[in-house]
Image 1 (cartoon, rainbow, N blue to C red):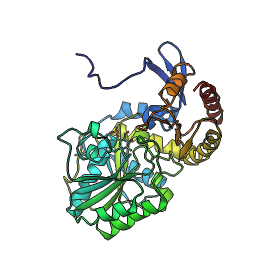
Image 2: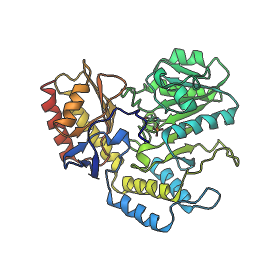
Image 3: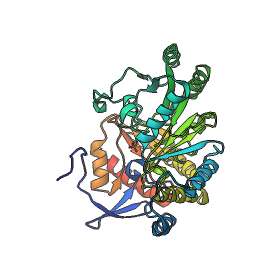
Image 4: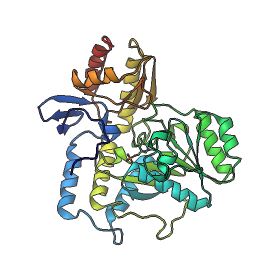
Length: 377
Ligand code: PLP
């Protein structure tokens, strides 16, 4: 057998990681300003993360959701504390797409309706309804295409109001900062309009926090910036720091029944330990404030650089837009200067998603390398 070749890959094989740094098998060292698609939140090989996982592995790795697992309750408590959503309920699964899939299903169970509103430049995953509400026709297979997905322009309140004339709207799903689309922020008025229309029409507000959550934006959920509560927050990526875990924080008015949702691997002992370790480190090292402060300083510096058209985003989730495609710039940063950055579906936008505990000296290192390659761009 060989691998099903779906990923365009760089000729680099990371072998070891520590903090914000990666070493490949040839011994080359790289600064990780991308965190493997926003996954690395507390840095590579954080000692508390490793210690907690190692101790858990020696005790119990997995048993099914048919028995008690006190780690799930501990995780629910900790995430409630960290996010401020203390009265929400936690459901655990394995990935971002699965979290969104379950959130949409939950909305439909809740109000008995079936159409979902999402937005241009949004990404919500590659499965069933998650991909149907994603703005990328290339990855929607005929079997996923459905009239139940309505993809509207971002920040267009009139289009949103018009769409809500349809009585079948079960939910609106939106990222707090649209990541893969190129780091776009919904306007304050638009987010509040979504909340208002959901309330008026008995629809649920699903806050896709898979990429922008876990403190990355300077708030635990990027949607908190808008001063509103969503009905469901979906999470993955950073909450496991590389251990695969997905989650839903579900508002108290949504009531569960046995069998409503389920997953074999959702919330295993090992997954809960990983997510607990991440949450503990975020809390103890005050990483949400650090992300806010460090991101603001980085943004200030980036705006002043030549050829930079615009810098968008908040905290450590930033997009830098140029007038030209950025691929040559990214490749040079990686191959010649040893710095990982991310692309987006806007070819002119570089995405920066470093670990939340990135040091000031590492930000300076990044800027030095970035300025160097910009001079040749
Ligand atoms: N939602 C958002 C905002 C994402 O960025 C992603 C992945 O990049 C997903 C959902 C899907 O997550 P996963 O790849 O874990 O299924």
